[in-house]
Length: 489
Image (cartoon, rainbow, N blue to C red; front, side, top):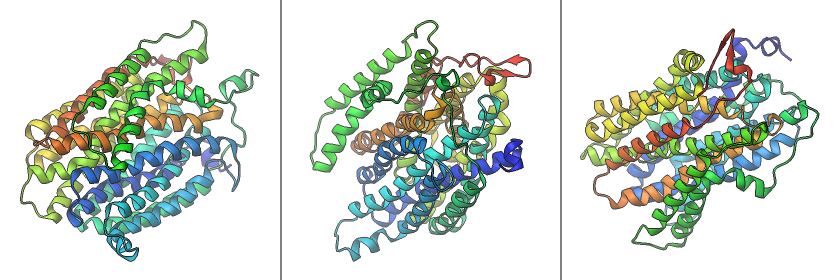
């Protein structure tokens, strides 16, 4: 083990955050370039853009859960997480390079439509990202002790990742999205490979039960489904909507959407008001983990709606804007969002969390984001107003990509971190799929595309409220900083 890892020095936390940075960069390039390419170069409508983006959540549903389970059990190439990070880095870099050539690929294969090829390219990129994203986050929990250093690991991860993403959006805004794609592919490959080889993983991970001499129990499929109960409404709707979309069926009413929304509120409500058995720590942690799933899912309805539909929204609100100018405005918008998210985790959110707790810090950040999107709905009609919206929305984005990982990692069995990271990711990808299939359909039928901002505002406000139902982890080192106890409620 290298000295900087043994001493948990700042340089180690920098290196530890670089593999996740690689995958975050690949995702940032996709966010900046994919919708822009599909909208301006191939003239796809908003519903088809949403369908292409559905590839990401589909890859996440299968990729992160399955890879999480496998990476908990295997050991080769000197690690359990390392092999998946390396493979994802290579595949992701080459998939990024394919984005500008979707039309060329389609023509060479003899396909008339562009959507199918775009789906395959997006699915390959998203599968690569999802193969690696779970291990890049799980490895932080593997090599850091619970508590303050665990939080530090995830906040440093986001600060480094956010800083690199800021640079990526600056490249897109100044030199164009094609330059961003080529540079992003190279940096993704470098950051996925070399830092990963410098981190030494523990050969054995002891779970909470194993530390007390009790063997860890594997989760069955039934148990996994019970664990993700707050997400059942999303799961049912996604299966329904995907079947309709791929089958070419059209439904004029929204009865199924209303029914699934009702189911979601029922399952989420049952979760947030559930109470654990006194004295049963495992039962209590599992209930709190379910509450985390419920709360986090509504955050991602909000942010994914902006990621996918900001470009069509800008095109609607700025009629006559040139394609290059449209790409520049959206790139600077995402630059602003990520600049705030790069600065705040280490310099503001972590100190604030030590004072008032992670959960309160997170909820306050989300409320700021909600107000920012509400402002965008009312006043987001110029480039400066859009950038102002994203400036304050960055407060919530900084929290979303850092604090929930530290919170959820204390609720689950350490020896099954990959599995639970995968299940946690379902609270991201199932809402993402809802955005691509359901919200995309809704927005395509609404004349005022500005409703995108209102959807984002309301959903992230609901997330903030739900986070307040999550209780702090008792008797964890993270609840104590020197002699001061931190209350996560």
